[in-house]
Image (cartoon, rainbow, N blue to C red):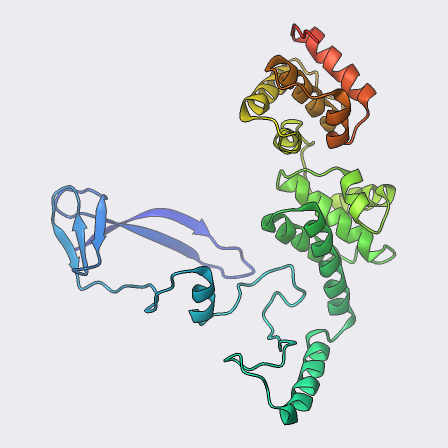
Length: 324
């Protein structure tokens, strides 16, 4: 005696499956409440509003084993790693570990090590079988290296890998360096995921120059029809304030200043990092956590002159009284 109502319809992309998937939520047939609880000791589904037992002898869909820490969870799990775009074969192929140990951690017998060595060598050759896969393997490893140096989160790396794969499919790599396209894809992913990094920051840890990254980024953004909004200065506030060891109150004040500046169109046509740095400088002075213009400039990657010009402009147009 269960009644179910659809709560969401989500279309799956055509590449994966052309179908509509419906998710259902249970509803109490007695009082119509959706506030249900699962009693795993009695294997029942009970309505918390009226106490009606809706289902009995339910199945626990979780694992039959217990784990008390992450190491045990990884060891006892019987599935592989999830699919990822940051590996050229999407992580679907197997890997033979470089250590000469078996599944139980015991040393492999010396007479079998030569055989394992040959298997490992052929496994490497099979995983990268053609020029496209070799290109992807090198590019994605370079992309992961740059992202690690910049401390970027996982979602940015996945997005950058997808952008690079789209560029390969459309033949945009020909005539350009792999490092340049990988760095440009990472810059585009940072902007798309609202985790902004400047071209200078990416160029510092990449093997190509700022000019080439910018030129390649504009090219792939145009060819892939990527509609990316200009970077908002507020996206930089949290990172700059964290590096300057400023409190949350200073961050909130800086964001408030930037919102007022945006309303008066004081941020358009100006570098977002310079405006963000000036707002942080003003907020730190107002709240008694003052940082020098040189300290803020070093963190933001701009000159002291830029901060001085921007903060004077903001203070004047927003009627902020700064007593230095």
